[in-house]
Image (cartoon, rainbow, N blue to C red; front, side, top):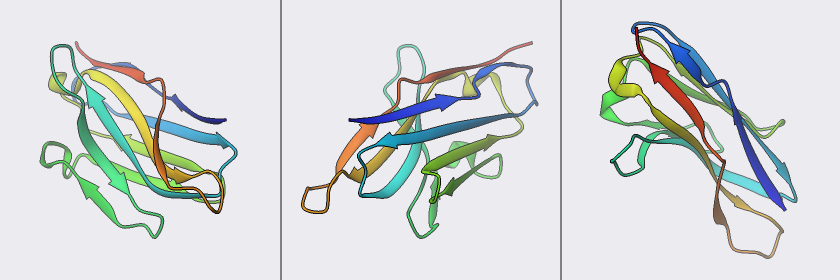
Length: 121
């Protein structure tokens, strides 16, 4: 079994900050790319940011300069620091990991259950 558990969502005023965390656990041989996606009501799920096992990062244009993704490989954690939040950032944020469960298995994508982020005054 593999679990991805997010935490850190909540309600914040425009211009505020939140830090999301995601912990991976279970039978995991290697984690490749980890990332954060979001889905607002009526919209498709979209990539927010991702980070490879070597630390290379990728950001959606709409969060560049405001959000920072980081990871702790030893503890199988990924974080998303969100600053200068806007009402349009309101969404459910999902953690994603491309990982290999055992040495001879093909990597697959795994998802957390999501955490709600609401930006409102």
